[in-house]
Amino acid sequence: MKRFRRLRKNAVIRNMMRENSIAPVDFIYPIFVIEGENIKNPVNSMPDIFQYSIDRLPEILDKVKESGISGVMLFGIPDKKDEFGSCAYDDNGITQRAVRFIKNNYPEIYCIVDVCLCEYTSHGHCGVVEGCEILNDKTLPLLAKMAVSLASAGADMIAPSDMMDGRVEVIRSALDTNGFENIPIMSYSAKFASAYYGPFRDAAQSAPGFGDRKSYQMDIANGQEALREIESDIDEGADIVMVKPALAYLDVLKEAALTYNIPFAVYNVSGEYSMVKAAAANGWIDEKRIVLENLIAMKRAGAKIIITYHALDAVKWLKEV
Ligand code: PBG
Ligand code: ZN
Image 1 (tube, rainbow, N blue to C red):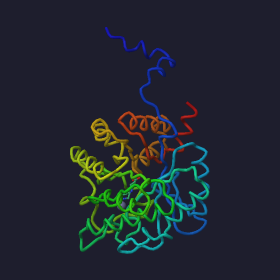
Image 2: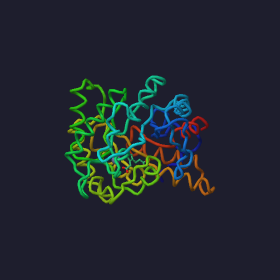
Image 3: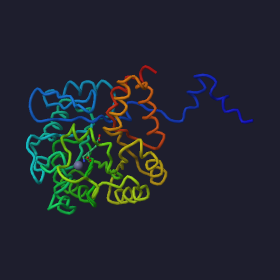
Image 4: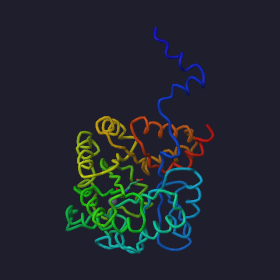
Protein backbone atom coordinates (compact mmCIF):
# COMPACT_ATOMS: atom_id res chain seq x y z
CA MET A 1 0.00 0.00 0.00
CA LYS A 2 1.22 3.50 -0.79
CA ARG A 3 0.92 5.47 2.47
CA PHE A 4 0.43 9.10 1.47
CA ARG A 5 -0.60 9.88 5.01
CA ARG A 6 3.02 9.56 6.24
CA LEU A 7 3.68 13.01 4.83
CA ARG A 8 0.51 14.49 6.33
CA LYS A 9 1.10 13.38 9.90
CA ASN A 10 1.63 16.78 11.52
CA ALA A 11 1.90 20.45 10.65
CA VAL A 12 5.69 20.42 10.38
CA ILE A 13 5.82 17.74 7.69
CA ARG A 14 2.75 19.17 5.95
CA ASN A 15 4.41 22.58 5.76
CA MET A 16 7.60 20.98 4.45
CA MET A 17 5.64 19.25 1.70
CA ARG A 18 3.58 22.24 0.68
CA GLU A 19 4.01 22.84 -3.07
CA ASN A 20 2.57 26.33 -3.36
CA SER A 21 2.19 29.40 -1.21
CA ILE A 22 0.69 32.84 -1.40
CA ALA A 23 2.28 36.00 -0.08
CA PRO A 24 1.43 39.72 -0.04
CA VAL A 25 3.79 40.40 -2.98
CA ASP A 26 1.57 38.23 -5.20
CA PHE A 27 -1.39 40.57 -4.88
CA ILE A 28 -2.65 43.61 -6.75
CA TYR A 29 -5.61 45.49 -5.26
CA PRO A 30 -8.14 47.18 -7.60
CA ILE A 31 -9.21 50.71 -6.65
CA PHE A 32 -12.08 52.80 -8.05
CA VAL A 33 -11.37 56.53 -8.23
CA ILE A 34 -14.21 58.94 -8.81
CA GLU A 35 -14.30 62.63 -9.76
CA GLY A 36 -15.30 64.96 -6.92
CA GLU A 37 -14.30 65.75 -3.35
CA ASN A 38 -14.67 64.02 -0.03
CA ILE A 39 -16.35 60.98 -1.56
CA LYS A 40 -16.26 57.45 -0.26
CA ASN A 41 -19.23 55.69 -1.87
CA PRO A 42 -19.95 52.10 -0.98
CA VAL A 43 -20.46 49.84 -3.98
CA ASN A 44 -23.77 48.08 -3.28
CA SER A 45 -22.95 44.84 -5.02
CA MET A 46 -19.43 44.63 -3.53
CA PRO A 47 -19.29 44.62 0.28
CA ASP A 48 -16.31 46.60 1.71
CA ILE A 49 -15.45 48.11 -1.69
CA PHE A 50 -15.78 51.87 -2.25
CA GLN A 51 -15.38 54.53 -4.89
CA TYR A 52 -12.92 57.14 -3.59
CA SER A 53 -12.36 60.71 -4.66
CA ILE A 54 -8.66 61.53 -4.95
CA ASP A 55 -8.54 63.44 -1.64
CA ARG A 56 -9.94 60.39 0.18
CA LEU A 57 -7.52 57.91 -1.42
CA PRO A 58 -5.02 58.00 1.49
CA GLU A 59 -7.54 56.06 3.58
CA ILE A 60 -7.11 53.02 1.37
CA LEU A 61 -3.54 53.69 0.19
CA ASP A 62 -2.27 53.70 3.77
CA LYS A 63 -3.72 50.21 4.16
CA VAL A 64 -2.20 49.07 0.88
CA LYS A 65 1.19 50.42 1.90
CA GLU A 66 1.07 48.81 5.31
CA SER A 67 -0.10 45.46 3.91
CA GLY A 68 3.03 44.87 1.86
CA ILE A 69 1.09 43.95 -1.28
CA SER A 70 2.79 44.88 -4.54
CA GLY A 71 0.45 47.47 -5.89
CA VAL A 72 -2.88 48.69 -7.13
CA MET A 73 -4.88 48.56 -10.33
CA LEU A 74 -6.70 51.82 -11.00
CA PHE A 75 -10.14 52.34 -12.52
CA GLY A 76 -11.21 55.92 -13.07
CA ILE A 77 -14.80 57.14 -13.13
CA PRO A 78 -15.04 60.48 -14.94
CA ASP A 79 -17.86 63.00 -14.47
CA LYS A 80 -18.28 63.49 -18.21
CA LYS A 81 -18.69 60.70 -20.70
CA ASP A 82 -18.84 61.07 -24.47
CA GLU A 83 -18.99 58.97 -27.60
CA PHE A 84 -15.20 58.70 -27.91
CA GLY A 85 -14.31 58.47 -24.22
CA SER A 86 -12.27 61.69 -24.30
CA CYS A 87 -11.59 61.76 -20.57
CA ALA A 88 -9.69 58.49 -20.94
CA TYR A 89 -6.81 60.23 -22.74
CA ASP A 90 -7.12 63.70 -21.19
CA ASP A 91 -3.83 64.45 -19.39
CA ASN A 92 -5.95 65.97 -16.64
CA GLY A 93 -8.45 63.13 -16.52
CA ILE A 94 -9.47 61.45 -13.29
CA THR A 95 -7.17 58.45 -13.72
CA GLN A 96 -4.17 60.57 -14.75
CA ARG A 97 -4.63 62.78 -11.66
CA ALA A 98 -5.05 59.73 -9.43
CA VAL A 99 -1.81 58.25 -10.79
CA ARG A 100 0.03 61.53 -10.15
CA PHE A 101 -1.38 61.69 -6.63
CA ILE A 102 -0.27 58.15 -5.87
CA LYS A 103 3.21 58.50 -7.35
CA ASN A 104 3.74 61.82 -5.51
CA ASN A 105 2.53 60.57 -2.14
CA TYR A 106 3.08 56.81 -2.24
CA PRO A 107 5.97 56.27 -4.64
CA GLU A 108 6.51 52.74 -3.37
CA ILE A 109 3.05 51.54 -4.43
CA TYR A 110 3.28 49.95 -7.88
CA CYS A 111 0.63 51.61 -9.96
CA ILE A 112 -1.01 49.61 -12.75
CA VAL A 113 -3.65 51.27 -14.92
CA ASP A 114 -6.51 49.58 -16.73
CA VAL A 115 -6.59 50.83 -20.30
CA CYS A 116 -10.08 50.68 -21.83
CA LEU A 117 -12.71 53.15 -22.92
CA CYS A 118 -15.86 51.69 -21.32
CA GLU A 119 -15.74 53.80 -18.13
CA TYR A 120 -15.42 56.92 -20.29
CA THR A 121 -17.85 56.35 -23.17
CA SER A 122 -21.49 57.46 -23.11
CA HIS A 123 -22.54 54.12 -24.64
CA GLY A 124 -20.43 52.10 -22.18
CA HIS A 125 -18.66 50.02 -24.82
CA CYS A 126 -14.92 49.39 -24.78
CA GLY A 127 -14.36 50.89 -28.22
CA VAL A 128 -15.63 53.39 -30.77
CA VAL A 129 -19.22 52.68 -31.81
CA GLU A 130 -20.75 53.11 -35.24
CA GLY A 131 -24.39 52.10 -35.50
CA CYS A 132 -24.48 48.90 -33.50
CA GLU A 133 -20.90 47.94 -34.23
CA ILE A 134 -17.83 48.32 -32.03
CA LEU A 135 -15.05 49.34 -34.37
CA ASN A 136 -11.69 47.70 -33.84
CA ASP A 137 -9.23 49.78 -35.84
CA LYS A 138 -10.73 53.16 -34.96
CA THR A 139 -10.38 52.27 -31.29
CA LEU A 140 -6.68 51.41 -31.44
CA PRO A 141 -5.26 54.94 -31.65
CA LEU A 142 -7.43 56.05 -28.73
CA LEU A 143 -6.13 53.21 -26.57
CA ALA A 144 -2.57 54.11 -27.55
CA LYS A 145 -3.20 57.73 -26.62
CA MET A 146 -4.66 56.68 -23.29
CA ALA A 147 -1.67 54.47 -22.53
CA VAL A 148 0.83 57.25 -23.34
CA SER A 149 -1.14 59.78 -21.31
CA LEU A 150 -1.20 57.47 -18.26
CA ALA A 151 2.47 56.59 -18.65
CA SER A 152 3.24 60.33 -18.75
CA ALA A 153 1.28 60.73 -15.52
CA GLY A 154 3.62 58.18 -13.92
CA ALA A 155 1.86 54.81 -14.26
CA ASP A 156 4.22 51.89 -13.68
CA MET A 157 2.42 49.38 -15.89
CA ILE A 158 -0.20 49.47 -18.65
CA ALA A 159 -2.98 46.87 -18.64
CA PRO A 160 -5.22 46.95 -21.73
CA SER A 161 -8.59 45.25 -21.05
CA ASP A 162 -10.57 46.29 -24.13
CA MET A 163 -10.06 43.10 -26.22
CA MET A 164 -9.59 44.92 -29.52
CA ASP A 165 -7.35 42.95 -31.89
CA GLY A 166 -3.84 44.30 -32.32
CA ARG A 167 -3.94 46.69 -29.38
CA VAL A 168 -0.83 45.38 -27.64
CA GLU A 169 1.30 46.10 -30.70
CA VAL A 170 -0.14 49.58 -31.16
CA ILE A 171 0.24 50.45 -27.47
CA ARG A 172 3.79 49.04 -27.36
CA SER A 173 4.88 51.11 -30.30
CA ALA A 174 3.21 54.28 -28.96
CA LEU A 175 4.90 53.82 -25.59
CA ASP A 176 8.26 53.22 -27.27
CA THR A 177 8.11 56.26 -29.53
CA ASN A 178 7.20 58.44 -26.56
CA GLY A 179 10.14 57.39 -24.43
CA PHE A 180 8.30 54.78 -22.35
CA GLU A 181 10.16 51.74 -23.64
CA ASN A 182 10.66 50.59 -20.04
CA ILE A 183 6.97 50.58 -19.11
CA PRO A 184 5.66 47.00 -19.24
CA ILE A 185 2.35 45.86 -20.71
CA MET A 186 0.19 43.37 -18.86
CA SER A 187 -2.41 42.32 -21.39
CA TYR A 188 -5.86 41.05 -20.51
CA SER A 189 -5.26 38.41 -23.17
CA ALA A 190 -7.88 35.77 -22.46
CA LYS A 191 -10.74 37.89 -21.23
CA PHE A 192 -14.08 36.14 -21.45
CA ALA A 193 -17.53 37.71 -21.99
CA SER A 194 -18.47 36.76 -18.46
CA ALA A 195 -21.44 37.41 -16.19
CA TYR A 196 -18.92 37.62 -13.35
CA TYR A 197 -18.20 41.27 -14.23
CA GLY A 198 -21.70 42.33 -13.14
CA PRO A 199 -20.79 43.97 -9.81
CA PHE A 200 -17.78 45.75 -11.36
CA ARG A 201 -20.05 47.52 -13.80
CA ASP A 202 -21.89 49.03 -10.80
CA ALA A 203 -18.60 50.02 -9.24
CA ALA A 204 -17.12 51.52 -12.40
CA GLN A 205 -20.44 52.72 -13.87
CA SER A 206 -19.48 51.05 -17.13
CA ALA A 207 -22.36 48.79 -18.16
CA PRO A 208 -22.92 48.87 -21.93
CA GLY A 209 -25.94 50.98 -22.88
CA PHE A 210 -26.97 48.55 -25.63
CA GLY A 211 -26.10 44.97 -26.50
CA ASP A 212 -23.24 43.15 -24.82
CA ARG A 213 -19.48 42.67 -25.16
CA LYS A 214 -19.61 39.35 -27.01
CA SER A 215 -18.25 40.74 -30.28
CA TYR A 216 -14.94 41.55 -28.61
CA GLN A 217 -14.63 39.55 -25.37
CA MET A 218 -14.16 35.79 -25.70
CA ASP A 219 -16.84 33.11 -25.84
CA ILE A 220 -16.98 31.47 -22.42
CA ALA A 221 -16.88 28.01 -24.04
CA ASN A 222 -13.48 28.44 -25.70
CA GLY A 223 -10.19 27.18 -24.32
CA GLN A 224 -8.18 26.64 -27.51
CA GLU A 225 -8.95 30.14 -28.75
CA ALA A 226 -7.65 31.47 -25.44
CA LEU A 227 -4.26 29.98 -26.27
CA ARG A 228 -4.30 31.72 -29.65
CA GLU A 229 -5.18 35.06 -28.02
CA ILE A 230 -2.35 34.63 -25.53
CA GLU A 231 0.16 33.64 -28.19
CA SER A 232 -0.78 36.62 -30.29
CA ASP A 233 -0.37 39.05 -27.37
CA ILE A 234 3.05 37.56 -26.61
CA ASP A 235 4.02 38.08 -30.27
CA GLU A 236 2.79 41.66 -30.10
CA GLY A 237 5.03 42.37 -27.14
CA ALA A 238 3.05 41.75 -23.95
CA ASP A 239 5.32 41.33 -20.92
CA ILE A 240 2.68 39.64 -18.78
CA VAL A 241 -0.50 37.92 -19.99
CA MET A 242 -3.72 37.58 -18.05
CA VAL A 243 -6.60 35.17 -17.82
CA LYS A 244 -9.88 36.61 -16.57
CA PRO A 245 -12.06 35.70 -14.67
CA ALA A 246 -10.13 33.34 -12.42
CA LEU A 247 -12.03 30.49 -10.81
CA ALA A 248 -14.17 29.25 -13.69
CA TYR A 249 -11.15 29.54 -16.03
CA LEU A 250 -8.33 27.90 -14.09
CA ASP A 251 -8.19 25.18 -16.74
CA VAL A 252 -7.32 27.86 -19.29
CA LEU A 253 -4.71 29.38 -17.00
CA LYS A 254 -3.11 26.04 -16.26
CA GLU A 255 -2.86 24.95 -19.88
CA ALA A 256 -1.56 28.34 -20.98
CA ALA A 257 1.00 28.52 -18.17
CA LEU A 258 2.33 25.10 -19.17
CA THR A 259 2.44 26.13 -22.82
CA TYR A 260 4.05 29.58 -22.69
CA ASN A 261 7.12 30.67 -20.81
CA ILE A 262 5.92 34.11 -19.74
CA PRO A 263 4.58 35.45 -16.42
CA PHE A 264 0.84 34.98 -15.98
CA ALA A 265 -1.64 37.13 -14.10
CA VAL A 266 -5.15 36.17 -13.14
CA TYR A 267 -8.02 38.51 -12.30
CA ASN A 268 -10.22 37.29 -9.46
CA VAL A 269 -13.15 39.43 -10.60
CA SER A 270 -15.98 41.28 -8.91
CA GLY A 271 -18.64 38.56 -9.22
CA GLU A 272 -16.30 35.98 -7.74
CA TYR A 273 -15.61 38.32 -4.85
CA SER A 274 -19.27 39.19 -4.23
CA MET A 275 -20.41 35.56 -4.23
CA VAL A 276 -17.92 34.75 -1.49
CA LYS A 277 -18.82 37.88 0.50
CA ALA A 278 -22.56 37.15 0.24
CA ALA A 279 -22.23 33.56 1.40
CA ALA A 280 -19.89 34.64 4.20
CA ALA A 281 -22.29 37.38 5.34
CA ASN A 282 -24.96 34.70 5.68
CA GLY A 283 -22.68 32.55 7.78
CA TRP A 284 -22.78 29.80 5.16
CA ILE A 285 -19.04 29.57 4.58
CA ASP A 286 -15.84 30.34 6.43
CA GLU A 287 -14.73 33.45 4.53
CA LYS A 288 -11.10 33.32 5.56
CA ARG A 289 -10.59 29.68 4.62
CA ILE A 290 -12.55 29.97 1.37
CA VAL A 291 -10.63 33.05 0.22
CA LEU A 292 -7.23 31.56 1.00
CA GLU A 293 -8.26 28.32 -0.72
CA ASN A 294 -9.39 30.18 -3.85
CA LEU A 295 -6.21 32.25 -3.97
CA ILE A 296 -3.91 29.27 -3.61
CA ALA A 297 -5.84 27.50 -6.37
CA MET A 298 -4.98 30.42 -8.67
CA LYS A 299 -1.33 30.13 -7.71
CA ARG A 300 -1.37 26.36 -8.19
CA ALA A 301 -2.87 26.80 -11.66
CA GLY A 302 0.07 28.97 -12.67
CA ALA A 303 -0.60 32.58 -11.74
CA LYS A 304 2.35 34.72 -10.74
CA ILE A 305 0.22 37.79 -10.06
CA ILE A 306 -3.27 37.74 -8.55
CA ILE A 307 -5.47 40.79 -8.94
CA THR A 308 -8.07 40.52 -6.20
CA TYR A 309 -10.50 42.57 -4.11
CA HIS A 310 -9.67 40.17 -1.26
CA ALA A 311 -6.02 41.30 -1.19
CA LEU A 312 -6.07 43.32 2.04
CA ASP A 313 -8.10 40.72 3.95
CA ALA A 314 -5.95 37.90 2.61
CA VAL A 315 -2.79 39.59 3.89
CA LYS A 316 -4.35 39.98 7.33
CA TRP A 317 -5.34 36.31 7.37
CA LEU A 318 -1.98 35.12 6.08
CA LYS A 319 -0.36 36.79 9.07
CA GLU A 320 -2.69 34.92 11.44
CA VAL A 321 -1.95 31.48 10.01
C1 PBG B 1 -13.03 47.16 -18.38
C2 PBG B 1 -12.89 46.13 -17.32
C3 PBG B 1 -13.86 45.28 -16.78
C4 PBG B 1 -13.25 44.57 -15.75
C5 PBG B 1 -11.92 44.98 -15.73
N1 PBG B 1 -11.72 45.94 -16.71
C6 PBG B 1 -15.31 45.15 -17.08
C7 PBG B 1 -15.79 44.66 -18.36
O1 PBG B 1 -15.04 44.25 -19.24
O2 PBG B 1 -17.01 44.70 -18.52
C8 PBG B 1 -13.91 43.58 -14.85
C9 PBG B 1 -13.34 43.47 -13.48
C10 PBG B 1 -14.22 42.84 -12.46
O3 PBG B 1 -15.32 42.32 -12.73
O4 PBG B 1 -13.81 42.86 -11.29
N2 PBG B 1 -13.10 46.65 -19.67
ZN1 ZN C 1 -13.90 48.06 -21.23
